Length: 217
Ligand SMILES: [Ca+2]
Ligand SMILES: [Ca+2]
Image (cartoon, rainbow, N blue to C red; front, side, top):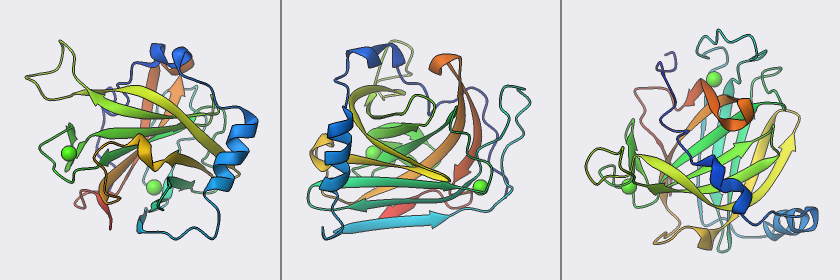
């Protein structure tokens, strides 16, 4: 099934102008954070899903040379860290503008948090290759949200980002997520980030409908 059509990205409504105020992660911290997710750490909770090749939405913008085609996403939770992994179909990952957001329903209640396609997300984790940057984003409300329910995200801290030939990984301290017992539901949206983050174009979703989310248990 094709990815559902997206107009302007709900999932990417993040107040990016706040980003410069966030504490940057140095190369040393990056290495340290990666090492923190040491291979011997016990994975307490885990969830993953594959996605078909060739199911990207049509992207008409000429600046998007390759529509990022998700083939895999996974979340692993240890006592100290949460690792987010995405992989793309061969040749579809553009390290100059590909980004993804994990929508995280950390209380596993679709009626709370930013709503959409089966999850109510308390947090997002954004991985952006072009800016070599990963952020933890928290659900937020503003005057444009209907009612009192959050309808956008605001970044609260940066995270370690590891870019490989066919994908990205981010490692986030588990303590970044409040009221989180290690289990969650998630969805992933892939997009091209343009105009320094002011404009995003969705290319793929994981999981495809009718599955609503991936469970981490
Ligand atoms: Ca795909
Ligand atoms: Ca929720």
